[in-house]
Image 1 (cartoon, protein in one colour):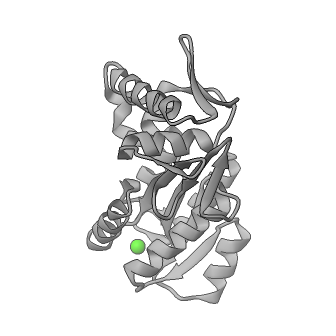
Image 2 (cartoon, rainbow, N blue to C red):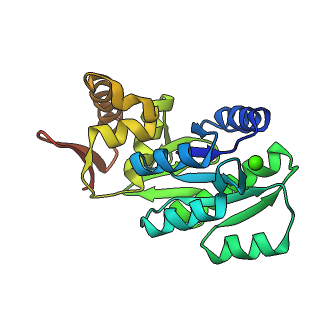
Length: 225
Ligand code: CA
């Protein structure tokens, strides 16, 4: 899961970034309206944390743009003003949640978890796919009740596919989501291939009824047998 933080205050931005990285999210940051817009034009995220008062623009109009672009990110507004008006406008524009500053990192992380769960996992903490269960609270994967040991990247890749069963995914989109936005600068995606190869091996050995199929020259898709 990849999160974009749009926040101009450096200390708060770093605090949030570290807190979310500890929760195993891939975190990207933007310190202004303009940077946020550029990032959102080029990349997709699972969740956006959006400050309203930015030095060069209004977070609410950034939110409007996100919705106009047809993007699917869930959005949590983080605002210094605990104003009912901002809260209502934000929710009206399609924000999923609103958190007034100052807030405790534990609360932010609980809200992020809950919004992502609602948005991506149909409200539960467990993704069921074929005979595989992914427990997103504990990062545990089970095949018919037996634990499948995966490393962090293998787990993230599996969750990515489990949220998009049957959908063709190209290597660069997958890499951006699991490794971060910078990954589109690399010369080749052999590291993606290596992780997927290991994940496929583990799924097969564990008796999983799901398979990540390679689609020649394009990428991969997850199929349930
Ligand atoms: Ca601000």
